[in-house]
Structure formats: C-alpha cells, structure tokens
Image 1 (cartoon, rainbow, N blue to C red):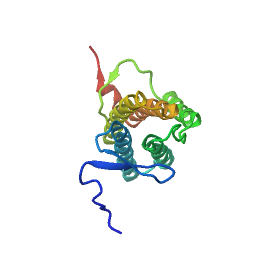
Image 2 (cartoon, rainbow, N blue to C red):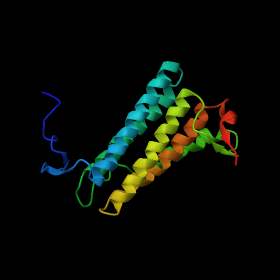
Image 3 (cartoon, one colour):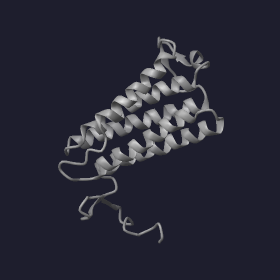
Image 4 (tube, rainbow, N blue to C red):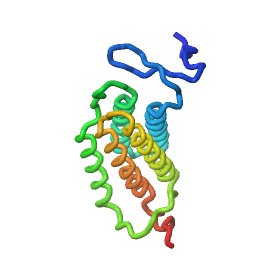
Length: 184
C-alpha cells in the first residue's frame, strides 16, 4: 500500500471521526495547525530521545519521554477529532505525572535567580527548542478552543509540558547553566 493517496493534493485533509465519516478541511485550518504543532513537538522529543540514547545512561528519562510522546499522540487525537463532546484521552493524572517529574528535577537544581538563555549542552538546547514548539502548540490550542469545545486537560497538559521541558533543559545543562544566564 503506497503512503501517498493524492487526496491532499488540493490543500485539504480528512479529520478523524469515530464513526468513520471523514470530514475534509483545509490544511491550514486552525484544528490542523493545532495538532500539527503537537506532531512537530512529538518529533522534537524523538530527536531529544535519540540524542540522549547516544550519550547512554538515560534509560529512566527515555522511558519518561516515551510516555510524553504517547500522551502527545493522545493530545493530537483529542484535537483532531471534531465531535462534541470531543474525546477525553488526556487526563488530570497525566498533568499530575508531569508535575511530579518537574518537582523531582527541581529538587536537584540550584534556585533559579535569572533568566536562562536557551543553550547549554546539545540535548538541553534541543529541549529548549521543544519547549518553544510546545508553547506554539499551546497558543494554537487556545485559538482552537475559542471555536469549539475541547478536552481542557489537553491544554493544561501542554502548559505543564512546557514547564517540564524548561526544567529538563536546566537539568541537562547542569554544570554549564550558570554560563547561560541573562541579566538586564
């Protein structure tokens, strides 16, 4: 079966509906923009995982990031399914899990006393790029939420995920972090 279908050659794509009745929308539709940004974020986290794998010794973090990627697929599903009420696959527990991971990392970091320039190690820098894409996805979801009802936990998850990625970037930059502070 070929990967190409030619169905999108005129700038439209089909949205998933649980009953199989595909609804076609423009590829620049706000819904497509929202789940497309989530997909981009997921790919960046995959890049981060591969960087960490090449360094070795990050098995627990890799498992945690794989879980984040799986949750992002759920966020994408929640966003790409135009039914009312939409699916609710991302939960408050997913947000709590991120908060626990943030708290765990924060305990091991020095207090934050300045803005952090997005740099440090290669993996920290990729983490910062992922954080900014996460913020873009969050903004796109806010825009979409003004047009249709969504799973509110999907938006909360993205908000917390950007905090997680910031904290993870600080963790990955340990030792070089002080060099990358910005002061006015």
